[in-house]
Amino acid sequence: MSQATPLPGDSPMAARLPALAVACPTCGAAPDALCTSHSGTRTRFHDVHQARTAAHQEQTR
Image (cartoon, rainbow, N blue to C red; front, side, top):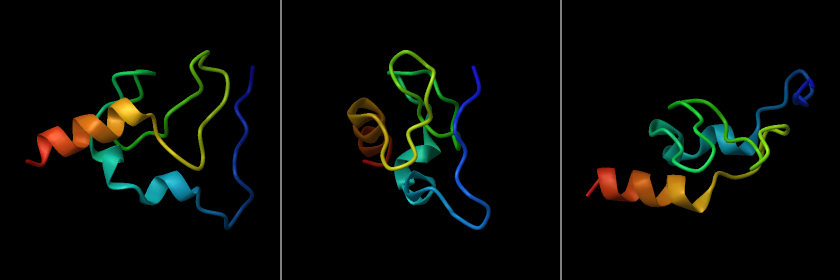
């Protein structure tokens, strides 16, 4: 299956989130990579998993 990609010139909102600095414990996305759906078939362009946000907050304390 192919993952949807943003249109040329569009930057996914999630690409600006500081939580991308850490790996996602929920979906396994590497640092600087967007999260995927729980099934791994769709890219989450607008947000990241709550666990990733929490992991980032814990790391930056």
